[in-house]
Length: 289
Length: 165
Image (cartoon, rainbow over all chains, first blue to last red):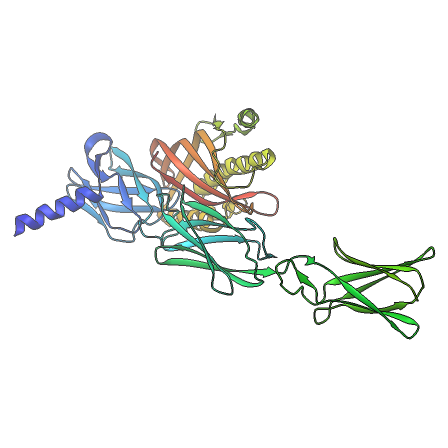
């Protein structure tokens, strides 16, 4: 039983930590350590020495007994990077290096989604990019599948599966034809990050007005203003009425209210009245008293 | 663009560190993923700012002054380097980094333009000092993954992470 346990321990050690001789051969250290995992360094010889592990991410210093194994418990080294390992005695110094690699399990996703609001029906209008991190905020550079999902208000889902490269992945999605609030999610394993994307109606479509006499004036009113997908254009959108008559011109900007725009303008026989909203033109009416 | 970036290398050569040698810089043509084209000016600025971050790193870890990191680093990269400085100082440790050679390639420009990722195969020397005495100097090679994000007037390093080449 003891032999089996010893064999199992050795197998696990070999699987997770490749051993390498440091310069001079008096220090045996792992070439890689997974961030946050415990590890050990064997120091041969006798007497005492100082062991340094130094990198841009962390710095450790420990007095060690030569001829014994120095154990570093879980959590000792957690920032990924290349570390200089130095065993310094009074008269000699041995050095080597080890890599701390990101933990295998993703624990955080940095998710950039743009834009936060856009018109409906835009091809590749929404983009999302992710960086995948472990629990110690190390970028996981090993390829990982990331699922992007865009869910519109009626529950329709667009899905993309993208493999990370150098810890990053991106996708683009079409905005749907329905206005409202979409949920844009990036998932990797059990980790997800969600952004909210507002989809607003597009430009008005089929802009149309009617006119009728109202006393000495013309009463102008649009039909309910909608975009090309049938979404109501929001109240406050400006509609411009222009009346051209006998060398004169009157222009009135009117915000939509309850989906329509209404205005009264002076009645001039023979006038031409036109309608526009932004770059969209509506119908024209020639007014005869 | 790649030619221009290679020419740029000479601009990036900087005198520094242990032997006051100049780091050579080679910029490979971008191998981009992502839909957004990378303007040449943006690429130059990101690489310039990244290389300057090595100077900040060297000064901060040699002098054990975390404030020297602030102009060049942000987020997780700054936090981790600050931690190192804060660990070094009470132990009496200083580390001197001298970058000898960089081979840089831009590998990702995010669609919204808010991050650039690059790889850098770096050759550098690390000198370890304990209470002012040099313990060792080691030549190292590492492949760094760098993520930069734009700040007010420059790109700052947000991820600064070495791994195996």
